[in-house]
Length: 272
Image (cartoon, rainbow, N blue to C red; front, side, top):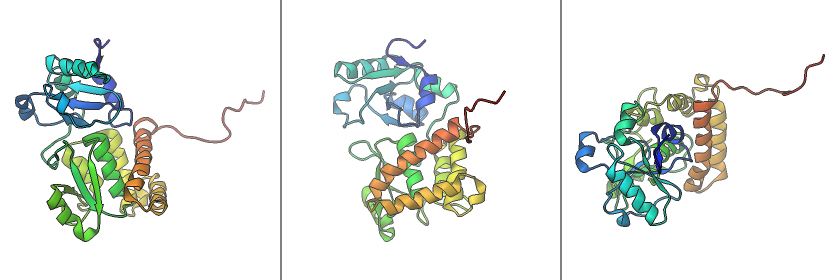
């Protein structure tokens, strides 16, 4: 049983990467972070003694983690509760998560944070597959408050330079197609995200994005849905919000329902 106001690593492992995941604040010391600068997926770095200066956070539960689940995270969670925000701490902290072999995000290829602590990413306008899948991955596993910019293809590099953003899914940038791999594959590899469900999802995205529908039976469906969404929405950000639900569903299917089938009729009693 977790301690009072604590969440176990097992519970967090079941909900990270889903819409039910809490806002996660990493309040490790700069020394501890420098020793291992990886992050639990979906984490926002914060100073536990400057919580009043935090920019607005997404609604819902806040989960605080420090190196081992002691004074920094417990004190910060208590402070947030005193301010009226539901908050708990991660039992065992970063060390327990790491020692359990759970996923961690590499930070060496992430763009710098803006004044509100958000990462900024830019890609071509009028997204179809990779340019919805990658922002979904970023917001669910890297930075829940990430800013995604959609601009004309010729302006991606200039906008990236001006706003210190990471360009993706365009030629001659770091997060883009490499050989047979699509941008989603590359992003997973470079962020160090090795999760079986994401590996399965990556095959579906790659198949739909590179016209190799034979790689995964779900690929034709993803392609059809993606093309339909691109025609339903003239606003790229509205399309992204709609597409988030699609990838949430595909991720949960890849994680929890790979062996499940459906047929008709069902629950029909057998004749004597």
